[in-house]
Image (tube, rainbow, N blue to C red; front, side):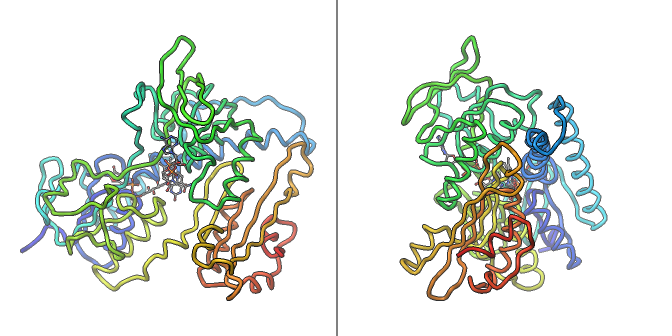
Length: 449
Ligand SMILES: Cc1cc2nc3c(=O)[nH]c(=O)nc-3n(C[C@H](O)[C@H](O)[C@H](O)COP(=O)(O)OP(=O)(O)OC[C@H]3O[C@@H](n4cnc5c(N)ncnc54)[C@H](O)[C@@H]3O)c2cc1C
Ligand SMILES: NC(=O)c1ccc[n+]([C@@H]2O[C@H](COP(=O)([O-])OP(=O)(O)OC[C@H]3O[C@@H](n4cnc5c(N)ncnc54)[C@H](O)[C@@H]3O)[C@@H](O)[C@H]2O)c1
């Protein structure tokens, strides 16, 4: 059968874009469907606008420390609406640049909602496209629990990027990546933040020392954290939204904005997966094998619509690997236990490899941890108390470093560099044999004993 495309991709987020560009290098016919904005969650309502807000918030934090460094006090005014308009302009430029690159490469972009009609045919708003191979890269969306009365008053991270003005009091339900990052950014702008999680501590999945250090850092900045707590009702009152809490310390908080950040779910609705015979896993994500292949041999799925790590570099690497496998050769499979990650909060947290708890499950008593906590040089001149934390998790028998964890300034940049060595199986004694760059925070990783 003659198909319209050798490869058709549904979804132009990081996973779909990377797959399309890689496939095009083999000179094959590639098309991609996108129902919203090119660039997906990452570019339009995730990593990129989030990082711009972090940069904006950092000015406020630096201003607070400036007087300790001899700068006279000054009153500066932050204009959220001007700033967020500039962020959206930046995003628009990125979208345009994606489109130009697609055009130059000869990748067809078809705008609209894609739905499978059969295993080789996709309908995009009435237009039928056939393809030999198909990659599903539809990503995910933030979800709000439907059973909470008044949930319609709450927003998700998507609307945080569209706020006409800054909230004055913000309640955030969910202390994962999104909850912690927004609590930190909004606090820096002077918003009164209450963060809550059904767990006792924020950032589940991270090393316990990281979780504690970030939580302390948020508390020190004046963010109220309520552990073992969730919202059971939201009521519109005369003075704002009343969030009725359930948990350790039942009470309510009154705020003007409620953000739900309790996780994201795959965009599998209205995709016609049943028409293609593609199966979901028990969590509702698209089920794939280690090569990102679904139960249909010619259909693959990458990125957030599968139940793996919901991170841009993961989606990109999976997308590229599938295109390479289809048209060239297999890439090495991703080791999901070695994916570096960061929480872009203040304090910042970053990690790669096993947490102490995960390492103990696998290596038992052979696990040895090297940990330090100290005041970074920058803060010794200020009246603020700020601690950095670094930790290496090591298998004592082989001396291999299993994980590295950090909380503090530039944690993401520092862990990113260490990740290469850890992936290559570096031993603790090799790390010790390195000379640091002085005076930096990163050099402390070479001084752990
Ligand atoms: C607030 C926030 C901050 C984040 N920050 C970071 C960060 O700092 N670092 C990091 O690594 N990750 C971050 N992430 C996660 C990151 O954005 C995702 O992991 C990444 O975007 C996943 O890429 P993807 O290609 O799988 O899906 P997406 O980026 O979600 O793209 C999927 C695309 O498919 C389209 N689509 C869906 N269904 C259809 C259909 N039926 N037809 C046509 N098109 C369709 C969607 O419109 C979307 O454009 C963040 C996420 C959020 C929400
Ligand atoms: N910096 C980054 O790389 C970055 C930033 C943002 C998002 N992301 C990706 O997006 C994903 C989704 O982020 P997220 O923060 O929404 O999810 P998450 O899974 O990181 O955190 C969700 C949190 O909500 C809590 N929770 C769940 N239900 C709750 C309830 N009913 N009441 C109170 N607390 C509840 C959980 O205990 C958890 O701590 C992340 O897992 C991550 O992969 C990455």
